[in-house]
Image 1 (cartoon, protein in one colour):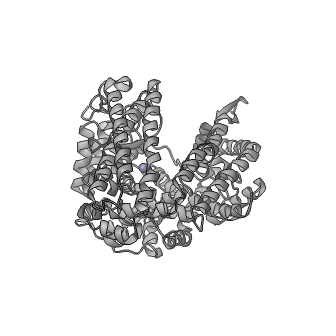
Image 2 (image 1 turned 90 degrees about the vertical axis):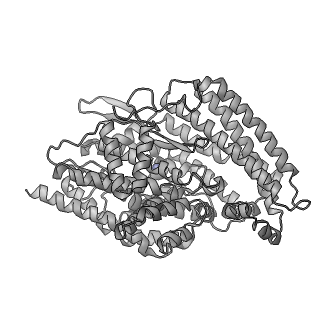
Image 3 (image 1 turned 180 degrees about the vertical axis):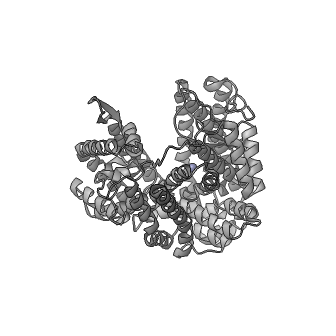
Length: 603
Ligand SMILES: [Zn+2]
C-alpha cells in the first residue's frame, strides 16, 4: 500500500490508555489548574491595571487547554478505534473531571472582566496582544454581563446536571429501551433497535419494507409520546426560564448569539430557501414518478434510485487517497499538498476491522498542531467523500494553527464550511467521473439527499421549534398539539408535496433533545449554504481563489458571520441573494437528475 490506513497512537503518547506517561501528564495539568486558580484569584484590576497579570492568566489557560485537548483526543482515539479497551472510559472520566474544574473557574474569569469599567476596558484592550484577541474577550465579557452572582451561577451549573442535562439523558435512555418490530417476507418478526429501524426505513430499496417500517415506527413513538411530551416540555421550559433569568428577550437570542449571527441573516437565509424550493420539489416528484407513486411518502424521500443494473465505482484506499488529492489540486495546490501530507503521515485511521465505532470525525492534537481523522473505509464512493469531508475539517484547523487560541474558536454554523467545501469538490468530481448514466443518477440522488435534508427537512425542524417555543413560553404544550405543530411545519417545508407526514418527528429526532445548545438544527443549513455560496464565488473567479478562501477560514474564529462574508466575499448575508446563489448550484443537479432519469425511463 502507498498510504498506511491506520494511525500511530504511540507517537502521541506511548503505552495506551494505561500509560504512566498519560497519568503524569494529567497530574501536571491538575497542578497547572491550581496555578491558574491562584493567578486568577490574585488578579485585581483596581490595584494593578497593567495588562501583564491578565496576559499571564491567558497564557496559563491556553497551556491547560492544549494539554487537556491533547489528552482528551488521545483517549477518544483509543476509545473509538479499539472499543474493547474498557479502560478508555476510566481515563476519559479523569480528563472530564479536569475539564469541569476549568469550567467552574469560567464564571470567576467572566465576572472579573465585567467588573472593569467600560472606559478602562477599552484602554486595556489597546495593548497590542490583547487587541488581537479583543473579539473573543469582548464576547466573553458581554456574556458575563448577563450572569447572576457567582454563587447563583454555581448553583445553576450544579442544578443543570439534574435539570437540562438530566432531561436530555432521560431521552437517550428511553430511546435505548425502544424496539421497532419488523416482519419479513417469511412472516418472521424481529425487533429492531431504533437506529437499525431508521437506517432500513429510509434506505431499503423495497417501498413495501419502507412503508411497513414507517407505520411500526410511528406506532412505537406514539406509544412513548406521553413521556417525550413531558421531556420536551420540561427540557425547553427549563431553558426558557434560564434564558429569562439571564435577561434574554427572545428564545432565538441565545442560539443567534452563539452562532455569531443576526436575526436578519437567519430570516434572509430561510427566505431564500423558501423562495427557491421548486427544483427540489420537482426532484421529489420525479422520484415519485420513478417509483410509480403519485406522491412520495415521508419514508420514501431518501430512498435510493437504482435504474438499470449498474456497477457502482469502487476504490481501494490508495485510489481514494489519490483521487482526493488530485481533485483537491484542481482547486488549489495548498489544499492538495496538505491532504497529501496528512495521508502520508498517518493522520487517518481508516482500516475496515471489527471493534471500531461507526461514523467519522476529525479531531485535533493541539500540542502537535495537527489533526487526526477517524473513519472506516470500505471502498464506496461515499467513503471517498467522507475522507474528503474530514480532510476539509483538518485543513480548516491547519490554516488557523499559528493564530492565538482565542481566535481559533469558531461556532457551529461555520464549523462545516471547509468540510462541505471539500466534499463539494469531490462530489462534483465523482459525478463527472461516473462510468454510466445510471451511476450518475445514483450519485446525483445521493447529493440531492443532502440538499433536501438542508432545505426541506431542517426547514421543517426550524418551523416546528419556533412555533413550539412560542407556545411553550405561554404554557405546557400537549402531545396532540405537538403533533399538529409538526405536521403543519412539514407541510409548509415540503410545499405539501408528500402523500404522508411524520407527526411524531418531534419525538424521533434526537436533535430536539440536545441540552448543550438550543436550536441545534438551523446551523447545519447555514453551514451548508455558506459553503455553497463560497463555492459559487469560486466558480465566478477561480483564479487565485485559494488564498482568498484561506484568508476567510482564518477569520472564522474572530468575527461575526456578516463581517466575515463582507470582508472576504463582499457579500451581504442579510440579503437573500448570496443564499440563493448557493441553492442555485444544487438546483442544477436537480434539473440534471430529472433530465437523465427521463432519458433512461423513455429509452
Ligand atoms: Zn463535518
